[in-house]
Length: 54
Image 1 (tube, one colour):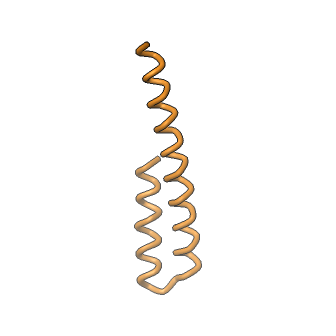
Image 2 (image 1 turned 90 degrees about the vertical axis):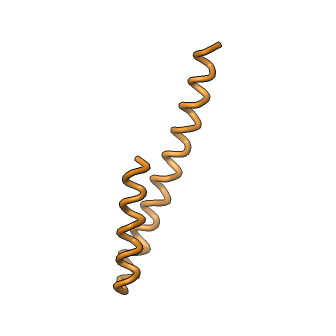
């Protein structure tokens, strides 16, 4: 999921360079959403790993 967030961020940067503001904004928002979903899943995974070891 982090890979997809990075891909959308690169798409947003390229679109912004070429002046496509709407596409850049859309790709940036998708990248943000995917990144936060990744962070939430990562934290849940860490907590689950700590619970299983005990």
